[in-house]
Each structure stands twice: as structure tokens, then as C-alpha cells.
Length: 417
Ligand SMILES: *Cc1c(COP(=O)(O)O)cnc(C)c1O
Image (cartoon, rainbow, N blue to C red; front, side):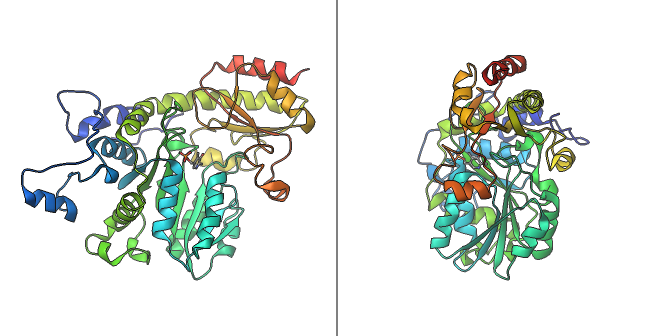
């Protein structure tokens, strides 16, 4: 597991731990320091003008638009996703909001997977209020996506492995469809991360991350990012403002996201948080390998347990999109869910667990469990839960770094004989 390096391409962890040195070392320090300055001054006023006009390479202006610390993280993410450029935000939701609010206009139409992060789905309601039409479909079939397209459709949005049901969309065929129809293809790679999957390979235009989860991994920092893969022709995006259409079209998307999304909307990632995320990212491949191995072992154990009705995990042969996951991903990830046969026992079983923590959140070093229906899908109501396949006894598990056997033993005692 771990992304196999291509010819002459350094491995994932090598890229992460040595990436900082590419942009110049300060005082011999191996790690990028935390630059806390909000303002940036210049000897020559020409440079101050240059930073405003984008002609001063590597210049900083005001920390809301970026700092040397966030820029180092952006460069790292760009390399990890093999993209053309990245912009970081204060949270994953800020990154996703910036994509929708700056690259769509009133009258535009968005087609999205119906199996997306709950707050992303909630955001669709806000978009509709501003005159952006949103259609959600089961993106497991490219035909459903194709059938939803309209002349005004500008963007398709999917997640690689959906939470909590672990559905895997028809990523490659949707990429091909978006290329044909010249649509922005936005892939949320939060759960898989570049350790398991690079959406550029299936034609994604933009890759978004909640850096809070897999990339940082430690649950002590919030962050988000948008990477432009360089595959989309920005001349096909009518939302780009006239002011940003001057230079190289390859830069238009990033320019608009940084100016309209980050500068104007203001959800900037702090230098301290960027540093925490960059430090966490150094162990990305190691963590994902371990948690994916543990998740598969636990999934297999749960699947064989008489108290469990179903297990949702892409690396299990029983998963409806198992073949796809095997083809595109390097592992099954740390996310799994399972349904108890007797939903009425859910609270009692989870209370008996000693090791996993009863908590919301994903991609932590600790294993986290949550009963889905009465918590994260409570606000959605029973009709939406039924439509999304959320059974009353569904339990989501975010696998941490504990020893696999200890977790299995603990689930075993909690489920009972
Ligand atoms: C958590 C999450 C988000 C939102 O990220 P935050 O950093 O919590 O704002 C978006 N997409 C997915 C798939 C997530 O799991």
C-alpha cells in the first residue's frame, strides 16, 4: 500500500518530508517556521505594487491571502496531488464553500452525489437560495449523473468514499463525462487522501480536502484545501471575472479562488494551524497504511459476527463497489460502518466499548464510534435517512492507530456472544 512511486518520482513520504527544502531553507531549519506576521513590507514601492498586481513572484501581501507557512503547505499539497497549485482555507467547509460560491453563479446548475458529507449537503440549501440549482444523484452510476445534466450544468461534485455508507462513485466514467461536456469535476478526496488515491488520475479538475482529517491526522487542527489539477480549461468557466481573464488561462481558477474565495470571504488558515497540519502530514502514508489494515481486519471480524447485519467497507469482497475500489485505490481507508441486527441494542453495545471513543469526527489517531441515525443524521429526519440508506442500527467507525487485535477483542466483548 502507499502510492507506488512512478519512474523517477519520489515516494509519498519522501515528497512530504523533503518538500519544504525545495523553496529555500531558512537558517538551516529543516522545517518551515511559523510566520505570524500579518503585514509584509518592501524596500521598494515597485515591489509593493508588484505584489498587488501578481507580478512579484513569491511575494506576500496580507496574511488573509496567505503566509510563507501556508504557502509551504500549499506547495506540499500540490506535489502530493500532482496538481498545478493549491489554496488553503481555515476548514474543509471553507474550501468547499469557496469552490461553490466563486465558480458558480445564479442560474448555474450543480450535479452532486447524494452521498456527501452532511454539512456539504446542507450547504446545497444555501446555494439554492442564491439561485444555484442543485441536483443530487446516486453517483454510483455515471448514467444517473448524465441524466441529471442540463444546458446550465457547470459542475459535478463527488466524494471518493462516502461517509458513513462508504459508497464509491463511478469516478472514472464521471471524469470522462465531465471532460466531454467541459464541466468542472470537483472531487473531495478527504477520506482517501493522496496516500490511497489521486483524483487527477480520473480527470478531476479540482481536488478538495478537509485537511482536518486524513492529512493532518492528529485531530488538533482544522484546515481545508483546493488543488487545481491543471486538467480543466478555465476558458470553459463563465464564472471567471473579467479582471482575472487577462493572463494565462491556466491560472484563472486559482486566481479567482484566492481573490474571491480566500481574500473576500476571509476564511484564512492561520500559520499555526498550517504548521500543525504540515507536521501531521509527514506520517500520512504510515498512518493510512496502518489504519486501513486495521479497518479491513475489523471489517472482516464484524462481517462474521452474528450480531452484525451488514458491514460497509470497500475492501470487503461483499462491498457493491469493491472492484472499483481495488482498481483505483491503494487501500480501503480508515472509514467503515456496520449495522446491528437489533437496532435497539446500539446504545448498549457502544457503551460497552472500552477503547473506541464515543465521539463525532473522523481521521483521528484514536478510534471514534458514533451511532449515525440519532446524531449526525438526526436533523435530516427519517425520510432522508431512508433515502440515504441510513439504518437505525448503523454505527460509523473511524479507525485510529490502536493495535488491531485490541480493537477486535473490544468489539467482540461489546457485541457479546
Ligand atoms: C469533515 C469533512 C469535510 C469538512 O471539513 P472540516 O475541516 O470539518 O470543515 C468535508 N468533506 C468531508 C468528506 C469531510 O469528512
